[in-house]
Amino acid sequence: MRLARLTGANPTVVELFAFLHDAKRANNHRDPEHGARAAEFARSLQGSLIRLSDREFERLAFACRYHTNGLTEAHVTVQTCWDSDRLDLGRIGMTPDPRYLCTSAAREPEMIEWAMLQCQPWIESRRQKGPT
Image 1 (cartoon, rainbow, N blue to C red):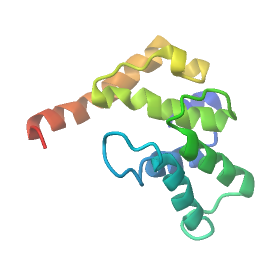
Image 2 (cartoon, helix red, strand yellow):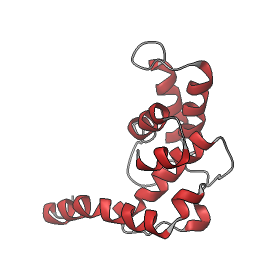
Image 3 (cartoon, rainbow, N blue to C red):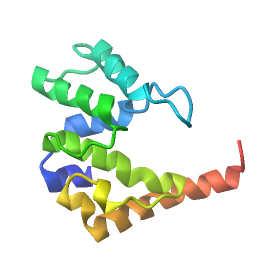
Image 4 (cartoon, rainbow, N blue to C red):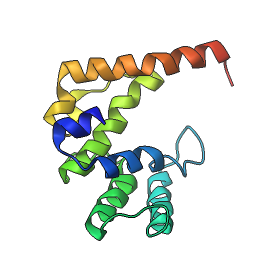
């Protein structure tokens, strides 16, 4: 939500994206269609658990559908969704590359460093659990 405040993105859409974009992932490895499935899952919730305007919902669905395609051009709310996901790459031991981030706020070295620090507790908990 820190990034959404900096970019002026719709925080509700960004928050829903965080919950939904990987919700239909079949595995933690290659699953190129999981974004499309997440968008359809979100569509099934629109009007019941999700109550967004048509425009807001289309941004959410677009962000989910295309979040793994490497795109960078879109509405600032969609860009913020994608940047939030890319800034989370520290979870898998990768430092986000600013060339693949959409917003100037996400490309700031301080933001990337902050994001990497947010991943540390998760990495440590995985290390303690050992291989699965």
